[in-house]
Amino acid sequence: MDRPRFSPYVDVAVRAVREAADVLRAYFARPPKPGEVRYKGPVNPVTEADHASEACIVSRLREAFPDHGVVAEEGRGARADGAPCWYVDPLDGTTNFAHRLPWFGISVALAEGEHVRLGVVYHPALDELFVAERGAGAWLLSGEQLWRLEVSRTARLQEALVATGTPTDIGTTGNNLPQIVTMLKLAEDVRQMGSAALNLCYVAAGRLDAFWEPDLNPWDVAAGALMVLEAGGVVTGMDGSPYAVTTRSPLATNGVLHPQILALFQTRLEGPFGTSA
Image 1 (cartoon, rainbow, N blue to C red):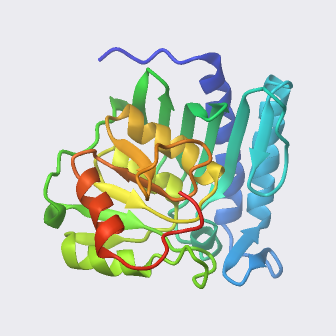
Image 2 (image 1 turned 90 degrees about the horizontal axis):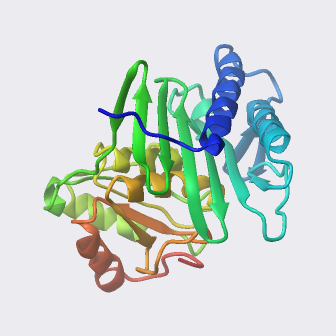
């Protein structure tokens, strides 16, 4: 199999993500210290590791691309008018990390306007590196093994393994409990694993057949969404609107299941699906 030819942007992003992963591993290898975990909201933790990982990634991106914008979850960086913009989630799955559950990732994406150009997602615990660049496909490097990602071919919802997440404030308009209940009845099973970026990569890899979640942010979604698209899947808003960097409530599927799930969300469920698509 021919190896993909990625741009220098990808090389920088991969190096930054791997360096940040070393930072996270050092924190993860020991019990949390008192005061290391704080809360931005009632159930929205942030750790010292989030900040340390973010500082590492943002520093590398600014060093390599001083004219680019950088928007990161914990507040570092800023947009630059008219310039490409990096979206950084330095620790996607902070709740898992804080409890020392080894299912969390690092997500970095580069967007030009509303369009995502590249995405890099790394799963430190499994040493799985997901990379996608527009027009070059989506790829997984696991140890020394490299292969191109393809979405599943599951066509029947009752045979589909799907995943979701819940908003940090379950009382908001993004409450998706009705969708979860319906999917538990109709799909093979539902997973809530705690990292939107990894869930999207798993759709791209055919490990999951669909993923949806309301009230996310660009740093949660951008890299993984491109992964799904480059692997042959479909990503829209939960209302069916075309995907863009500003999409807050994505639905990502293998494509075959997309009309079925959209129809469920739009016609069989009552209540709001989020403040915006």
